[in-house]
Image (cartoon, rainbow, N blue to C red):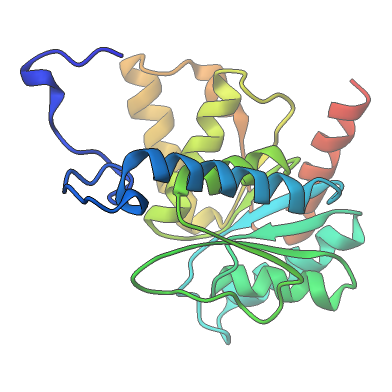
Length: 236
């Protein structure tokens, strides 16, 4: 542990994990939280141990059911199970619900990894296996550990968080042969252009890092990319 300057008193997330308020009740102390965190990992590992090949699909919880984005996510979910994958989402509404619905309708396994939030809560009805987490980092571990790739549809901060975390893990070789596919050239194109011009231009990433990202508008192509990536991982 390194604290430094004024003993680094600034609080950090998750808010309850590092809440500086003092409670006498042991169930509100950090040692107790460590046990709860451990329990989340044990529950997640135990529940998903026999899942088999899977792909995580991310996207906005606010995608309307009649929108093209929703239909696209549903098609991706269906095509993924037809390709032999279980589908993992955040378990919520919008694009997550659509991907779970596509997996369910396609006769595959539909997984939801939920998180406690002050809004957009509740597991969607198309989830076969659902786990609700208190801590984001425990939940993120499950997405990466049990997925052979990520398909990322248009979304907000949460979607961007998952995208960039996966990208960082691949870039730093914490995970290998892990395809990351962005779906929606109109939505993601400006971000990729900024990555190519600003990040590469400033030298904060290497030009080859951009090649870690694939982008398409075609659900079939998105599934083909992750399937080829998974096949390469098993048969390098």
